[in-house]
Image 1 (cartoon, rainbow, N blue to C red):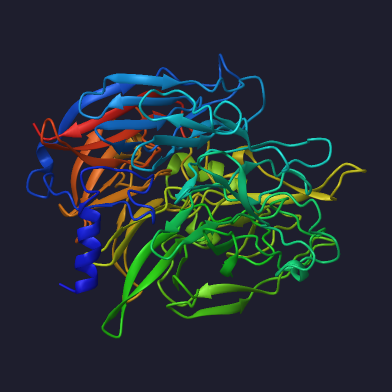
Image 2 (image 1 turned 90 degrees about the horizontal axis):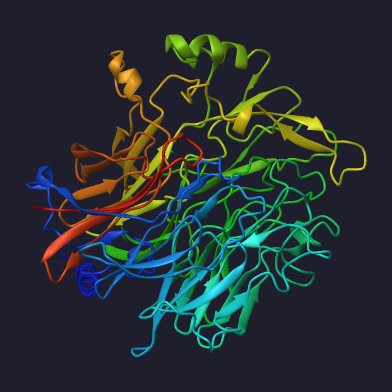
Length: 614
């Protein structure tokens, strides 16, 4: 075995019994060297315990639906995770017994997309043990991991306002956190989720706070100010007060090199940019910063002048790639568009060629679409990027509905600007890949990414006189290219799990992911399904994934893609699992949140479920 790989595996082995980061490690690999559960015994995997949070909403008693998307941490035998109502819970990892709960008293009387939260971050100096997380209300908390109480010396009584210094004049719009912060030494590095319905709004700047005091350590302007690199990519003063360009997903940290990687999103508004002509850095860019100072080291913009909501939704994954007999530290970024971009970690040099290709202009008055977009030559896309009328679904109950939906519509390519006629584009606003991201196997240097093919259908319509911008997108409910049963309007498959060889930039295998039970009952082969959430990979030769909108939890052979195990959950698991070793029971556990609901179904649950061998 290569010495570098051996060192990596040995360092991971020290963490192998736990899951101390959202992504397993600070670089988001979602890999575990545990192999008690393996190909030979996976068929015997059973439920060990189930914990119910009590926090769920179907949108009836509360005005907003909930999404249980949390990925727990496991440290010193304790699981720490957040609920859709942003409560932080600690439970015994081997029994599911609750130890404590912290309630930030999330406001339930304000408009939101979903009640949602994905997790927390852990920090220790060897003596103190703290948990850090931000809420949808825009508060950053430091919580004592032992007692569940706020740390009084942090900010004001354990809390820092993330809204301070970030809101536009008048305080319009919302700012909060739905994903955990990143930790580097004594810094808590925070992205945010912001309102982006109008051009001006809350700032998407990324900030670092002192882990002990809560004081601001640095702030990176995601929309560059005058005199800063990238400001000239905004025409005139269109940078000023600009909303969006935030990091709502998960950041990654190279602890050895002191680099934090930001997956940034599109400028507001998402679908019209006539008031922000230019490439619009650092919108939709992977940005590498010095984690100690916030200074930009390098960046790559994946979409110029975004008009499609193709933001970067997934955590960058720190990987190694073999080049000329040596291992190169790299970072892999999967995208909504179905592309995988791969760069040298320190320099940002692409490890596979990326070419700028001409794309169509916009027909909307005042809009100026960027004339080219970047296409990686390798690896090949893992998601659908276009369709033709001839590829319309053949499922009888969908065909008539979908034929009416596409009447007078334009079938666009990946970067066709939305016009006045309904425009059908792949992927849709949810990808491709989404925040579930990818997992990485350092033994074979394989990246595993789940994706779905839910296209979007929009047309641009004029806004009322006096609006800040003249056009907005309009479409059917959720503007997704599906029928009343949420069956996509193109022929299946509609969801995949893809294994990508990062050394060669090729797919190792690709399998259909997910089913619709009612279609199976009619004799229709597995179609694949919408999915939100991600995978983990283990040294036991397994890829575990929930994510699919079919209430299933699955394990695949990591080398072949063969489905080895499937379990029917009480609701769909739109989350990413974890695995760890229980010192008392001497068992390996796999845990996943099964909350259902979200954007894809009407079955809701509050269950966190642990599996182990009998």
